[in-house]
Length: 252
Image (tube, rainbow, N blue to C red; front, side):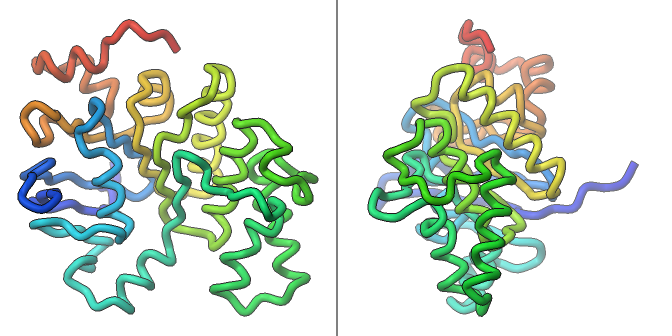
């Protein structure tokens, strides 16, 4: 059995807003190719953890390693290079309304690459096809469903061929069928592209459907209480808070 390669390592990390500590003593590893779930109840700091991992907020203490590189210990150009290899799909989709889907996906390519307009059009068409939206480039976000907006958000997040994709509550606001289709798409992309996925969610169906690894943030203790495959955690945990979180009676 080959040893898994660490992609992102969190070491002795504290998250805080001013003097208020949200979470402390966080240590966990996202392995290359994981679909890694950051899970916990409302207000536990799941989205804050993601903002620290993608360079939008610095930790109060501790380190975030990408491979062997200490992200927050590096200079800004190094951090920029690392984050250029990451894509982010925000909860709202963050697509705006004044641009077509093709223009939205093309924007990072126009900003960060030297590709010709013709090549950019080809890449945009490929990204839309990857998420099952071939032919939708000239549509505006307001003209498509919520589920399709989420898919378009993923296509944009993938524009620069990231090594890691971050998702903030990807199935929020979706009906169960659309949410399951989005889960299936995340699995397909991981399997076909080998991309590492980090997913912030509290949706049980998604946690068990796609999660290969996870961390549980316990709001009452303000620290992590478990890390590992969600199904294994459910089978083996003796922690009543984690068990309650993972057995809320929701059906997939």
